[in-house]
Image 1 (cartoon, rainbow, N blue to C red):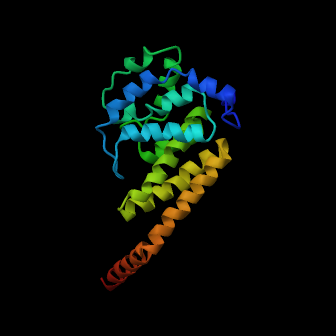
Image 2 (cartoon, one colour):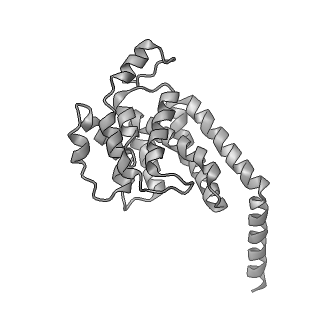
Image 3 (tube, rainbow, N blue to C red):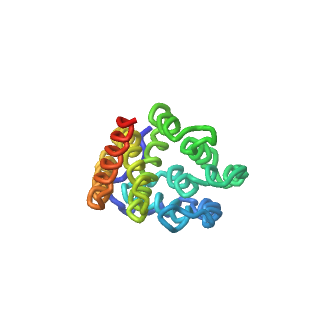
Length: 209
């Protein structure tokens, strides 16, 4: 079944959004306030930002929005009591299952995790992952480690763009734009030139041995 996505925030959509029982999920999300991020801020703000991006793209599905505000809870808080999620309301089981879908297991590599979403993720998991990555790519503009920015852009291109192309073309377009601007920053800062020079020097040293 396709996700509910009205073209406009009309009165019907507003009333549907009004009736979503969000507060208890947001309360659980506040447990992430103490989890800092590379770009500053904390993981709680990232959850709320991800929900905002979904609404910005027209998604008002209750399970999707509830999962968005706690999507990092299980991954960032070890041994989290999942019963806190399951006991909230009628959507709790579906919300918990969706959060599990986008939660990376401790023994799982990032590549295997993302490939799993590409190959086996539900439509909601893929949409949530795209919104999550848009939030991360926007805040990547506040990250100062060039190597991290390069790796994150590459990861987004290889793994997230195929997901976005499948589920939401507008998200796909925004992600492409974000990749371009972040790589432009690396280019303007001289990062790629410095990297090329380092690789050339390393190659010359190897040849001299």
